[in-house]
Image 1: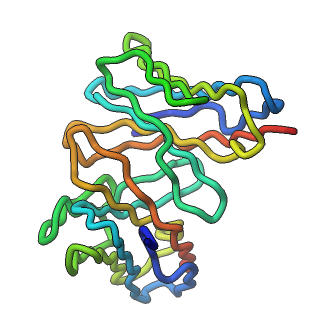
Image 2: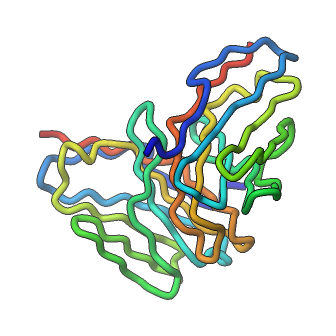
Length: 112
Length: 115
């Protein structure tokens, strides 16, 4: 039962353009969402989060949007840089406070 | 600060063998976690320890045991390895548990192959 889904396994964009990574979830009990970035042979690193009581959170080039009625969130990266090339995981925090459910990830490639 | 360290980085086991994956953090975090990552599945929580002296099952605990040795160290043991346990294992830590769940700091991972 995959409660968090990232339906695009990969995305390729040109340097300087916007990258939009999408995430859908099924568990309406999630009340906090996080995005992690992962480079090859490294562990994931935290990128940005959003509470379910908000619909937008911004941190520099990264903005996360949450649409609770559609159970959908997206991560926008503007402008995209080659160093952003990585796998991005979306995660929802479950009801028992230690149960974080991850999506399968989207591999972003930013071309110079 | 080394952050979260894991040993070994790579391991090959035969079916039925046992092994322990080691994890240590130097950030004085209370909570520690073990995940596995499989292709197309994202990361799935195996076990976690909300604080020293406590451990709880996550989403996929079968076939594993854990020990929170002290505040710094959290080990994962496979008593009788099976090919289905071939995966990349990540240890993580956070200041404390939720709510809301704070960011977790991950180690570099252990790539385990069971033949």
